[in-house]
Length: 260
Image (cartoon, rainbow, N blue to C red; front, side, top):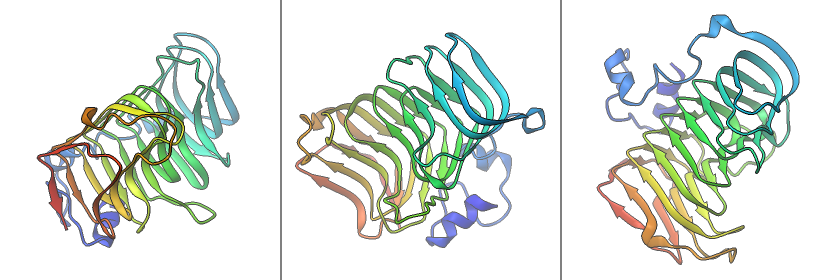
């Protein structure tokens, strides 16, 4: 299975997984059996740019070869496979499109897309792979029970599972993020475009990168409230140089289990 191969490349086996066959009870701990498409046999193909322009709409059961732009509020996408043909963003959530949810879907960047997702919203039980950055977050978001892995790009990438270049009220909970490369991170936080505050990284399995978690407060885009940034109860390991790199910031770090 590809998620086992990705971990064993780094010499790591995540908690509750072994290189033997995965039983459903073990897989459920990191959501691997429940992540991604809920009903792949139902998919109908669509080619091109899919624009979501109707408020409160539910978009489901599509296989999209192209990219997606969310322009309306309160859109939900479910059971969607997106095979990106866009250079920058497979799925773009516009700043005015509040209340977006992506759940039980798959994004394949095909090695040619920078961001699997660029925007904000609620992201539940998705399988994101083949991109430079899994989810590039720009505003309050909940990111829970996702599998982000197999990073690829057509140029020299700076791979991040979740990237936050300024933001607040972001919850990153119970995800499995495997960066097979020796740079950059599983989770990157910096204040390049705005400050950072009220960010929780809890109960995830985070693997690989140069340092597995970065927090860089030197970019000058806004203040970093490091007392409100919490890194708690995670399984962390496989960074080339270590688990954490904190610059001009000292977040709350408690109860994490380092794995070599």
